Length: 411
Image (cartoon, rainbow, N blue to C red; front, side):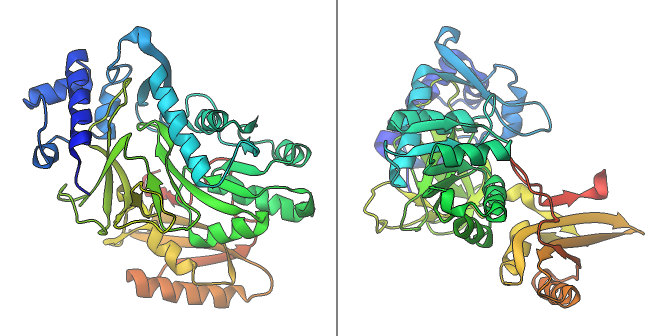
């Protein structure tokens, strides 16, 4: 999907602002001798920006608007390395709320809904992003934040919440608790807006069935406003993103070249109107593809496919490149197991070992299930893992994101 003339104009206004402010990325562009772009070909020559660049700019090297116009900062949720600090102007906050309200509207959520927000508040963009969008929509907000499942379920019943906003891990935990407590008939939820981690089709089906709701996959990252820059429509034909605020490219993660529409690759995002910390050609490391053509829902906004994983998800085991999504796809074919799994990689006696933990009920023979999964995984990735089958509920659940891949080789 080629950048338009109007989008190029917006990019040039961001380049001018970056260079005028002398911000981190402004200096990078100046050093490269770039002051404007006049064609899609010029745009494709712009240097990428990476998370490592943003870390180097700590604390406020990304600030592009005057300090008196900065009303808020957010920071990425990662726990390793120097944090990334993203400054926002009042207009950035408003733009983000407009995009998020569009997401709710796309999901068929209105000002008559009661939206229970369970992601975290604070430096993380999630909780406050879900709230700003809901308030812009005019819906009633129940700003619970994470944790305290007893209180979450009590408020869900008492307030008759119709929409739940959560990570997929916490939505699953809530669904299991509702089933366990036998309170499904007291829950009025109709829709779930789920984000912040990749989740399998099996997990989607489990959450939808346990909560009795329609699910929507929301996309976003702190560096680019936060959640709310895209969402799937009820037709389920990919996620619409807001191209009046963002320009998306899909590149080959190895060569850095653009791939044709429809081909998979890494998402690269340029912010077109962001003031506090504009980003140009930011490599997200998220894997997807642009879906060509018009959506059957009639919306004119372009679409990307569901996020398939990340370029940095790859594990090298016994000399083989393995992605968690490959294991997930294999496990999705076994109806006997739940959607929860854990992969542990160790280095024992001079060789790598991969253990896969899955859950099932007492209705199935654990050894039989383990052997069949091990054989199927071997046919997919080329070596045999150790498969451990445990009772449903044994693997850890999380109120935030669940760590499903644990590499113990470097502990």
